Image: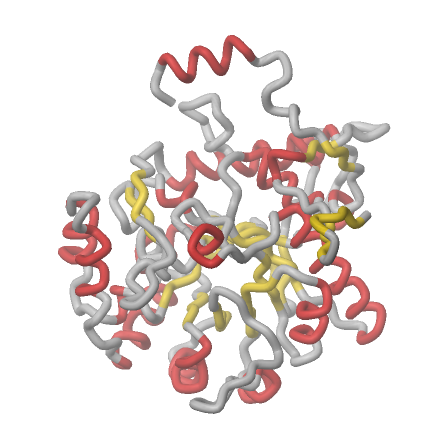
Length: 386
């Protein structure tokens, strides 16, 4: 239903994670008997979770551990891992910088050039650990870096920008053709980010295997404030999932919908899948893992932009190991640990044995779902400074 904003403008109502709730199913299922695996271009991952291509999260060690546990981490080829032979000192410098100096420091650090030789080296480090390797780059560098990544045996190539479309107009540079890119590679291509049905459908027609959904929902991202652009994640995921289903009916090919950003707790992750996601990409929750590269800090990869930074460094702290964040035991009661346990429990009470079945879960508009009857919890958290 459209609402009137003024005499000349109407708009749809859109919904985020805090505004909806899942309705329990008519049957319940033992969480131990639920399958949460994720398929991408013939490969199957035990966990439907991707670690975001952010320098505060993924380095080679984190990627290896994520792979060991059944998920997939995405290494950013435009980050410090490919600009510096030893990025550890750079990451410590970012983590210890005063808040008023961090953006200038990030701009300085990211002015160093990417070294092609380090791309292959980092991929090899991840592969030699026995983990699958996904890498990400911006559209302007995709044509150059894709063959390097494929030759180094990367398993997935991700092209990621603030907003991507299948049609881009510019008189000053040549637009990346996703159709040409996908046809030139033997490995699957994931692109993003996107938030609407029509654009998603056009991108799927280019041969991509996965689509990242979300503009500006990440904890460290300020795109929505700086540009005023974005669609809340429940609506964006549902719209893009509709495009996936229509594309599959038409072509027989299923493109994975990957909700990217905005998930702070296990309940948000569950709602993303119920909205239509096949997998989710997470940044800030994983930044709080002991293995994360940022030492308890997280920053958006648009933060170092020399002209218009669209992110900030946030302090996540270290909550536990990656294994604890994924599988528990949880040391906190706020839903930020044991994500897989929470997901399986949500699926169980909604009567879904698989992610595909969970996508059919009934949802209700419920802006009071997290506050109804929770006065004492709110007062306690305020008193604790949470």
